[in-house]
Image 1 (cartoon, rainbow, N blue to C red):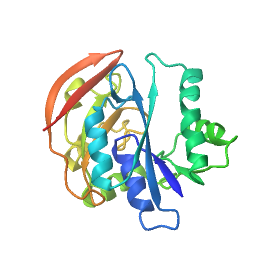
Image 2: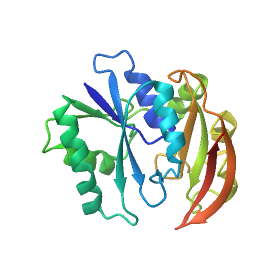
Image 3: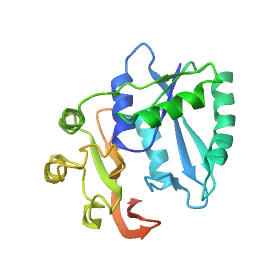
Image 4: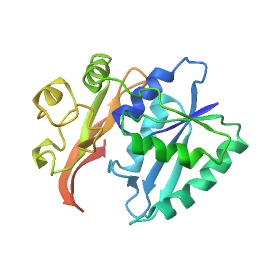
Length: 217
């Protein structure tokens, strides 16, 4: 049994797609939400959209609530009950959509080390340009919900993450945003039973990032 750390964005969604039908098919999603805002941490996606994603892929969603601000110690304390539940339910592996950041992978591996749960990275080490094309050509639809303005201007927030977006990115920005340049929210894909209808909300700058809100219809 495998659960997937679901960010609401494209990389975790494509990891789910890759694992579908595999020997270790995903049986549950795990997402961290910032409690005071009721939104997915860092991506800024509203909880109702997150829950709609889980319904569209037909998997149970396990929510981890964290404070704001949140230290590593507070984060890890919030994760413990989830991992206890996973072990009780027979989960043997936890999958992540990480692509190439070694320090992030090492952190996840350390987090799971005390538990009988194997970390899986189905997209690890792939060329992110080729991976972006595969996702887009495979029918994944996503919107950019968060931008680091030190890497991209605020006008990039709220745009569709599509071939045009990727084609216009500066050369020093990863096409999948793996260095934190941007984050996304997936609203359709080959793993959804139907798309999620959303409309654009306001774009705001908060704590050094630009967030583009999405409102469920």
